[in-house]
Structure formats: structure tokens, C-alpha cells
Image 1 (cartoon, helix red, strand yellow):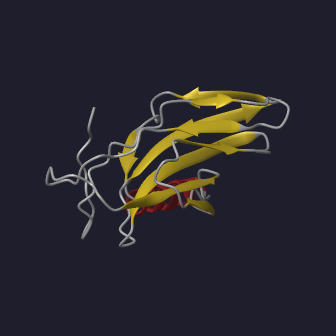
Image 2 (cartoon, rainbow, N blue to C red):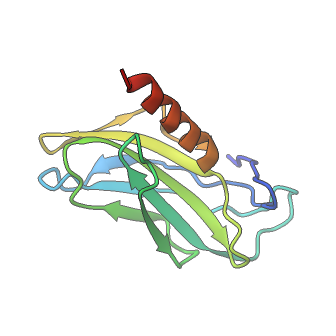
Length: 145
């Protein structure tokens, strides 16, 4: 399945999906992200300049506090290790050689006592960072007395 989304100036069709989030080592709260590389631009032309991916993670109120750049277009997975108990927002984007970044594909996981569960409603949701940052800000305002 090819999802076609773009951001301002970005013509990358996002075929990037988080296919699974699962505990790989429940004692350390590790989560494995898996995806399929995009193959075409939003205009339907062949994608020829895929440079790699970015993986973001953090708590719901700061979902992009951590980032790792994966400089390999052949990569199809990444393991986040040593996540503490709590809720974590995860996201993956594709990056071109021109430094254009796709929208994010997200998932939310909860780690409790070394067990990882995935919020299926958030798995594979497509967002922009702006959308997510706005949602986090709204949640903070609502939570304040």
C-alpha cells in the first residue's frame, strides 16, 4: 500500500509504515520499529534520492525530544533500547539526499514492568511535527489547573 502525503516543499510519497512494535527484550523495555521504504514521489515519479530515515521518540508531552538519523536507505528497522516504564510516542520519517523530510508515521507504546503494549489506534498514523507539537501543547494547557 502506498500512502501519498507531502509537506511544503516535500514531494516524497510516504510508503513508510511502522509494521510492528514489539518488545525484543522485555527486561530493558526495548521496542523494534519496522517499515517498508518508499519507492515513489508524491507526483508518482520514481524516488531516486532516498538518503535514509529519522526515528523520533519521547514522552507524549515532548514526543520529539530524542532523534536518531539512519543514513542508510536500505534500513528497514531500528531498535530503541532501555526505555523506562511509561508511555512513549514513536515516529519514523524518510529523508531525501536534498534533506527533504516526509511526514511522520507514528505509534504509541506503553512499557510497564518490562512489558510493551502498542496502542493500535496510533500505529501507522500519518502526521506532521507541527500537528503533534500543537496537540502536545493543547494537552499541557488542559492538564494545568
